[in-house]
Image 1 (cartoon, rainbow, N blue to C red):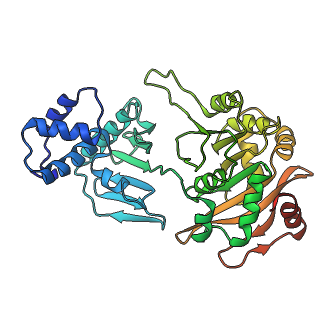
Image 2 (image 1 turned 90 degrees about the horizontal axis):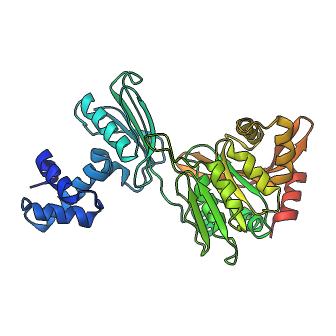
Image 3 (image 1 turned 180 degrees about the vertical axis):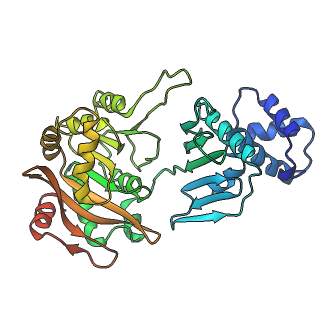
Length: 383
């Protein structure tokens, strides 16, 4: 018997034997063996993997999610599956059957994430048990039955030395990045989706002295810094009754009461930016956070938009940002590479505040864009 022969009958048998227990490889393997329908250790291993993918994973998409380089798996239809390995989208030769099968897969994945997906609620945003982010839509919102988007979350463990060796950080900037952490600058890492913001943030956290307590706040746990004293907090979505949600704003407030030496926000994407700026203005220096932006000069507009969700005026945002933030480090993904593209300083401006670009790197030689700002940044924060 092969993985292709994992029928509904055997799958139902395994599901019944597991009950409400764990759905890990050991438990699934034991249930398959107990069924008496699997012969041979190699067949058992293959079926264990296939059954676990059907019971607690992404079914036929699970093998794609497990590829080391894949960050996104996108399903537009039964024979329309795409992946992103870091070089842009590429089509995959995978047949999911019928539009009904794709919809059934989307519904099952939503249920794994504790959400419902049906005609009454045709849009679903959830987190799967392994941390994979799921977004799915079905008819009538999706014209072709169902559309599934899966984002793989891989915990970032690379250190700064590894990023320099990989060509993600120019050697001449390594001392400055170390100095930003050692001298407790408040740093904002900006960049687009998949540009490496979390990877750089984890590397910087690995430089924090080991006698300091770090509290991280994330929507999903991606940060895994090499540090002995990290308290990791993650948001929780509401259950099917709409109760029990814990958002980023709540967690930032909680972090302030946990005696942190440094507060780290995995990504500012909403009203929690108010709490982050307030925290950095009340003695919690050395903080780090990330934000979506296409360039360093776009960061002020992004922060203003997010702070507006918390009811902050443009003047209030400017006053808080200038006092709270020191340096913006911008990362970019281009031509299959993720690298630090620019470093800027937060400065007051006539109409609020600005992030003035100090230096830029395109993979060749770093270029000083504004000598005065660069000398200020290096003089104050560099080692």
